[in-house]
Length: 232
Ligand code: GRF
Image (cartoon, rainbow, N blue to C red; front, top):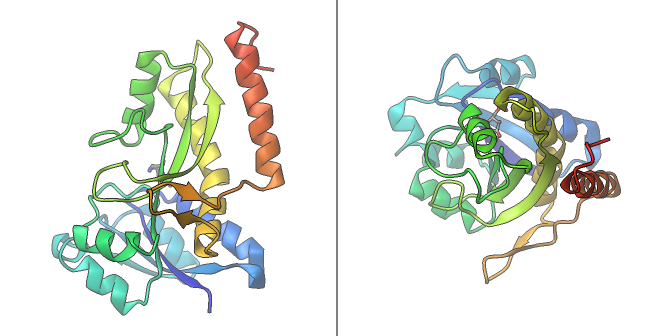
C-alpha cells in the first residue's frame, strides 16, 4: 500500500505538478500517490490540474480549512500532507497529528531561516532577498511545526544571485530548483527514508547522484562568484 498524500496549495500548482509527474514517472516503484488536493481558493490552478488528472480536488471554506481540516484528512486516510504554496496557517490539530509521524512537509523559496516567517511568501521573499543584496538564495524543504517556516530542515539547494538580477529573475530560477528538489524529498519522506531524530534534526536524506552532482557544480559556481568571476 503506497503512502497516501494530500497536497494543499493556494496557487497555480506548479510544485503540485512537479510532485505528480515525479511520482507518476516512478510508476509501480513509487512509494506514494496523491490521493487528494485541497485549496483555500476555489479558483486555484492547483485544483484544475488535479481534476484534469482525475485526482479528487476540494476547495475549503473557512471552517473546513481550520477546525474541519483534520477530519477531512482522516476521512481520506491521508498519511502525508504536502504544502505546495499553501498560504494559510495549518491548524495545530493537523500539525500535532502529522508532524509526530513526520508527515507534514513544506517547500519555501529561500534558504531558511533567511527570509522566512509570516508575510514571507511568493514574490515577497525574492523582493526582500534582492533588496538585501544576497549573493546566494535557493529553496528549502522542511518538516512543518506550529511556527511558520520554522520546522526541521530536510534539504536545501542554493543558487548564486547575479548582481543585476531582479526579484522576477530570482523567482523563476528558484521555482525551477523547487521543481527538482521538492518531488525527490516528498518521495524520500513517503518512503520512510527521512527520519526526524529526537534532537529535532533530520537524518536519512541524501540527494541522488544527479542532484549531488548538480549541487557540487552549483557550489563550484558559488566559489567562482565569490572571487568576482561571473557564474559560467
Ligand atoms: C512556490 O514559490 C513555493 O516556494 C511557495 O509558493 C509557491 C508555489 O508556487 N511555497 P506553485 O503554486 O507551486 O506554482
